[in-house]
Image (cartoon, rainbow over all chains, first blue to last red; front, side, top):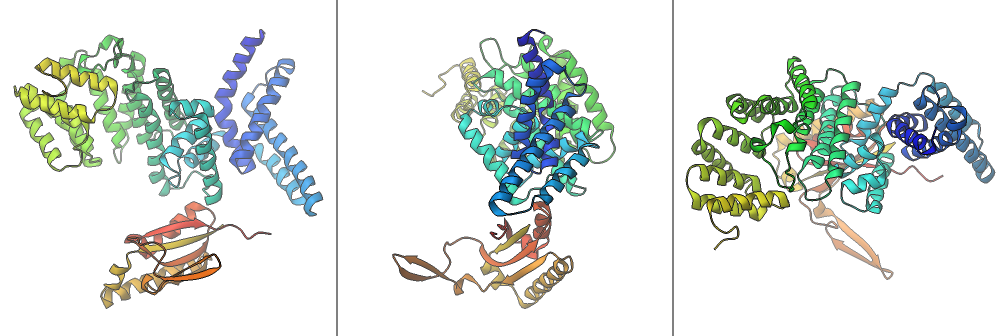
Length: 423
Length: 117
């Protein structure tokens, strides 16, 4: 085999196996740092041994076994060192190592991966730490790649990861998948982290789009992994469906010039039909499971109605309005109220939608949310009230930070006639 | 691992409680304490006198300075604590969530360093 092709093949295996090798090593060795060190040593051993001895039948198991052996060697070395220094006996460490060897026989890979996900998403860690740890430890991204995704230096990200791992160790965060009823609460946190990774990649930012696509791909991979580990969970199915149906439209969301293309103006031929088909099947599955409806499944059902329409005129707006009302009961929020108002404008017209947005605005919670003002501007424009519409768009412009969104708002103001920045 | 569960609440609200409310709160605390003693999790626990009885001590340049009141003025004050033995943070959180004061104040969960050998 050609050396560079071989390196690439190894790279792919390491990338694929990194998460589950680490997950099992953490359980066997008891902490993140020893497990990472052992995994690194196992990868080095693989690069040295596989070209001559051939690829093992089960590379993941080989890497775990090798990593564990390296760690045991180190525990023995450390024990000898400690014995010399402190006069402690090594028997107990040897016994620990033997127990580790016993255990690897019936390793349940899946359980370990789930333990790792729940630990990385533990509520006692910060939101920043959740996403960074999940990408680094569960997805196996390099620290450099995680840093790039969050536009921070590699050093900053490395420190963030070190702090998070220290908190796990110092606070005694368990390496466990919680039992019900705690499970039902904690899985919501895990799903929020996965969706957080996705939205981080999906937001229309001015910067590096390649990284954004990578983040969405990682979030989808995490969603599929959770679906594999927790089959038939309606919230997991709903979230995976939601992400697929959004991601299917990725190629149509931004024009060649880097401008935002709104859903209604998107070229539907650019939508990814395979992802849509998969997403639609998952929505149906999620909604067919009896019991509490997951807000993710409802959001996915709304996204499904959008992508099911061949042309924008075919969109089933009355049903979308109904689904937003279900969502508002499950998970009331100003952003959902705003989306509900936009759907209402398509069914009952702009006047009623404007009432809804004005009542939302009167409650004052989201007065600095640019999309609220953008929606008001739109409704006012439809109601042929150009001066107020221009004013609303200008307010939106005051709060909008992303360049593509600002350009869209300026184009709207220009379509009414007038300067974006006032007379 | 040992965890210190620090109970914070607004002591003005506690002071303003009527005798019957105070009585039922005390009963709830006694019930909770009995529970963690029976579960073998209780190591220590006390109710503190209010911050109006507090003194803050500093030593600067060898001089002892004692001043009235707590170190910082906050909306919630430290009113008591439990020292518990828990398997891990999730168990400590579960114990903290059962402390009556968690329903109106907040509980800070602090792991304790094992003693130096």
